[in-house]
Image (cartoon, rainbow, N blue to C red; front, side, top):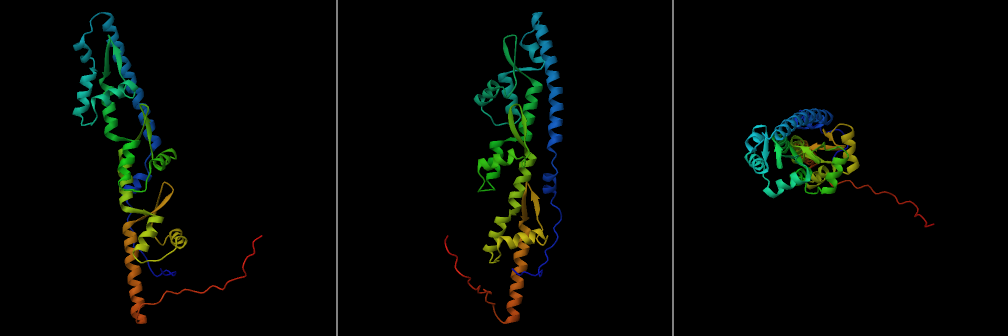
Length: 269
């Protein structure tokens, strides 16, 4: 690649997905969730008090319990299936036993408050578990391993939130990261792409061009990323420049390989 500024790349418009990812407000999400949980638990406590009061008066039967907003485990599982959540009956019961899905015992019956269940369904519709998010991104980042992925979460380069004892990642974040994986290269991948297209450049020279803004890029999670479209344009213009030089000189120019004089050999101490 030429050292002088002979190639000017087109200015690409800002990527709305990247902007959304970089501007994601995790603190606001946590605050909103905390406020919602306080209201939710307060309403559930009122439901429980009313049910226990009726039980003391011996006016609480299965139908009355349901009318108050409490579902049996079987009824709750049916609601989960209707919502399109793929989970086995055994796995669903395991969530209840571990307390990741809150249940109550009223009148010797194990029940789930409907608002709690609706919240659980909503969370599963809008968030991925760490394992599921990793599996989705792994499809596009073949070199990604689980330890490195968890490291990104621990460093907050991938936003996450803890809900009901479980660490979760917003689906919009996973979708944005998938978009980035499909459409952007990191520095190492970019250099490999250039070499595969017969454009030779060393890493430090490539990074200098990034520093000077000669190659448009974005920075996400501390990593510099270059859009595939930018690299494709760079390859095209580099090859066109080489062809132009070859036509002027009457043939392909042999690469310049300066001979560096050898200095005195170092002695082992």
